[in-house]
Image 1 (cartoon, rainbow, N blue to C red):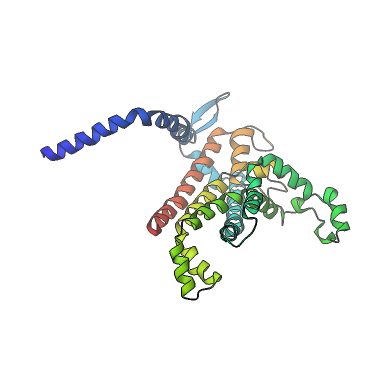
Image 2 (cartoon, rainbow, N blue to C red):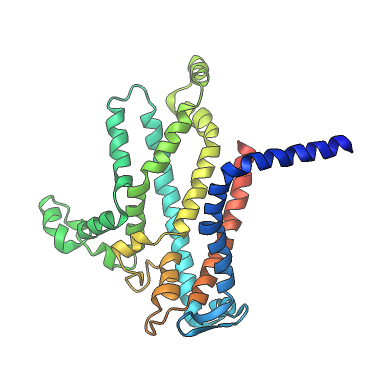
Length: 308
């Protein structure tokens, strides 16, 4: 018992020793992360706003979100669009990131630094700027004459004005801008693989494709899982790219409406046609999104940890 108490006191003394160094980061986390999250959970149980008065309604906001047609239709559509947005990023952004990283770590490739810079440059640009530029490029009025001169007249169409193509175009633009981040993460993961594996595979007569599928890809699975988690979280918080290329209503006719734009309209700007914000309902949407993220992230983290 004495040894056990001594060990506990030693751990407590060590924690107290580190506390002055951890206090600034811990305070920052509590003020800007933990407290807003808890306050959002509290706010989801109220209706009204600070200006006109709030009243406690319990879980009424959550009930309305899944029973009132006005909210059900918008939330169901926004959730489906956000999921599609995530799947496009996973299939295009992350898969191309692995491909680009494999090419950039090939020592026989000339100009690797140049290609690496070109891939990463869009990440440094503001989303509003790139969104507006792509909005012009996809506008047939602006790009139509140029494409017709190149013999690409079949590409002249209102991509962002068609419900069938608007969300896909917005998703691909987002992939184009952020593909540099997963590419660099995959590059770092591939460079950490020992050369002994590749030399042994070459001695056994394995070609480049076999080395990629049987050595490189299995060894970077933990990094791929972490990138998938980051993509999942970031996509469910996406807002700016839709705001830049369409509007907060997810035009045309809510076909590009995401969870982020729905939250903004409901809790901050106010839903059309009433235009009165409902912070309680917005907090309810944010709370459900938080639990959806937990349901997706926690199992993925466990799987990634086991694979690591």
